[in-house]
Length: 271
Image 1 (cartoon, rainbow, N blue to C red):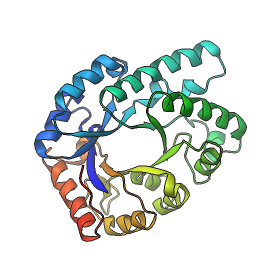
Image 2 (image 1 turned 30 degrees about the vertical axis):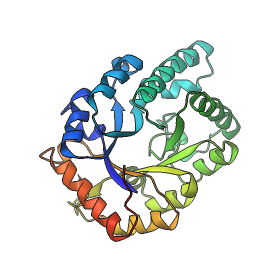
Image 3 (image 1 turned 90 degrees about the vertical axis):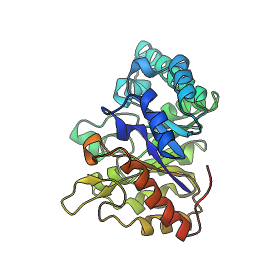
Image 4 (image 1 turned 30 degrees about the horizontal axis):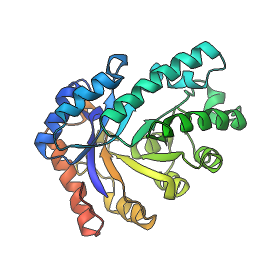
């Protein structure tokens, strides 16, 4: 295991082409690239980022999902075709960065009935995810479904149904989103287990405000212990918002804090 940073933590502070050299200069070993708009999708922008990342290992890419991801499951042929064209460009960026994973949200659960899952059509969902997973796999990228309170994987049980039918689908555990959903993170972890690819981490203070790891009350030692019990050996990527910390160098301090815990539990790996 190893700590890293998502460039989402620098959204509205630095553009990606500034964020990657910043993280590399701080000595952060690995990162997720949060592609923030249509202009950042594609090989050309991916090549630009690759030229600026230095020794930084790119674990994954993450798109601004509401721009096209829900439309990948549209019943309208033209809508779905256009959405797949944008997914193709995201994967081109991932390839340019040599990122093995794509952090995916999927559909949006905007209405109450959608949140409860009472209208979930799992055969249709499986068909859609099977097509998309194969699409990604054929381009050398693994699709990773993240637990997100307002999206496809908004509750425990969804991932099990989908991944049981789609062997190549992997999972992303987001500690913050588990907290928002009101479900203990370890319930999601117990569902993903050996199919967990990496983790999005953040801390929280006594007032419920998101903080960088080491600045709140979340028990990261317990998290690492639980991950270790599942034989997990991926990245723990810090994902917070721009106002959750003051100085950008704090990102490296937070990485060091996590890596020290990993070291003490004998599960810290090199980039």
